[in-house]
Length: 136
Image (cartoon, rainbow, N blue to C red):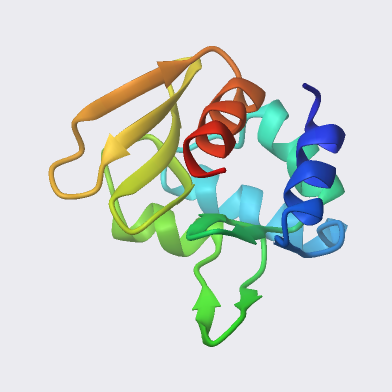
């Protein structure tokens, strides 16, 4: 499934999705990540061009900006996640128990407690399909 279809599926399942990322904010985020030695993958930049963050059923995908969440503090943005979890690749979101990361050309689900790789996927789409299947 392609990113627009996955986003539409999550919205249909009750997800909160922010509109497309503001180009200036996206550029500032890209620069902040670069300063930390991280590169925003093209696949995630495409996601941000469609949705500046996502919240659904306990999972969060970070945007270039803070994402308001129902009945909770705003979800962290990409630059904040990078600062919180150094050395684990680019953390793009997660759940209560997992982190979602881009590293070494693959997308990973990491254990939040120790950073161990729990699963790896070739694309962001494949990671999202897995997460949706687990939680539906």
